[in-house]
Amino acid sequence: MSMACFLVTLRLGLHDLLSHRRLVLVMALSIAIATSMLAIIEAYRAGLAAEFDEQMPNLLLVHENQFSGEFYGSQISNQVGESLARMGISLIVPEIHAVTGTAVENATLIRGVDLGQYTRLETFSMVSGRSLQPGDSPRLAMLGVRLAESRHLKVGDVISLRGRDFNVVGIFENGTYMDNQAWISLADAQTLLGWGQDISVYIIPDEGILHPGDSLPGGISVSRKGTSVRFMANQYRLPLALLSSVALALAISAALTLTNILWRLAWARRREMAILRTTGFPTLSLVGYLLAQAGGITLLGVFLGGLFAMIFFLAVRLTVSGFTIVPRLEAPILLPSLGWIGLMMLAGSLLPAWWLSHLNLAQLLRSE
Image 1 (tube, rainbow, N blue to C red):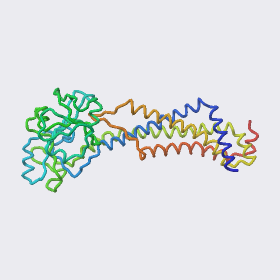
Image 2: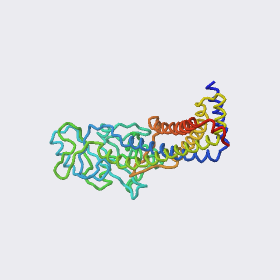
Image 3: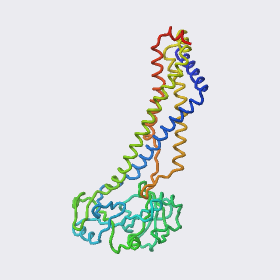
Image 4: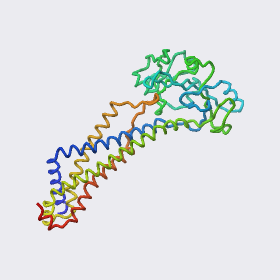
């Protein structure tokens, strides 16, 4: 009997919902805006975390003070490498990290690598072509998959770096910010930048000889590999967290508005609900009436919000400082948003139902 009553009120709720199409659309759009903002922000937050996820934190960087040598800015003499060798450090890998371009739109992150040792530092897979190898001729480059996609380049094409053409021999994928880089030989990078024998950083293992925070003569610092990566990521996490708070406030506002509207719709049907209750319908049947309306509006809003988010992801490419951040839509990311959606439906259904169930039936039957 209870289930039959619940289904009857559910059908009544859907019927009333269809008779208020404009109101339903307006409410669905307000929910769509909130849910799409939450999905977009959380997807980019997850993408940012994956973008700057260091894979080998057991390495140290030796670079110039006050510069983010993992990306660009540091320039030190090759004599620093000789000093490191005298300390007994077993692995010393010189690299150049720089950025070229005249604006953010055409900025290109360059990594000059030691062709004999760079494969020992990073893990990557070749999407197409081959990797750089010892003995390669000058002016060859391998591109991160994201850089290749943004420039519409493939193996065999030419990429211009600081006015000089490099032949693309391979496209690789690392899964982090490195997918935005162009890797060339260390000698090519030194020639391209006019640095002579200078380099940006030395990458060394953490063997206990040097420690993060140590300083060397000549304004040289030692830091943990990935420290500046996390620092850069944190610069963007705070604005995203603020935007997430705004989206959450919109979601709460939409839930409260939905509750108020459903209460008004239920109040307009208060006499019919009272009649049903006097004929044996349980108080719980009110939940079915309101749940149909809350569910219909919320699900339509979620569908539109998902559509808005997909259009945004396809139309907008978020690029900052030469990095293209790819949004990640995964179950752990979507679950909080789905939780808020469930709360909207429950709040919109249970609160008005609880309020109506406590009103005097005799007064409701006399209402017109």
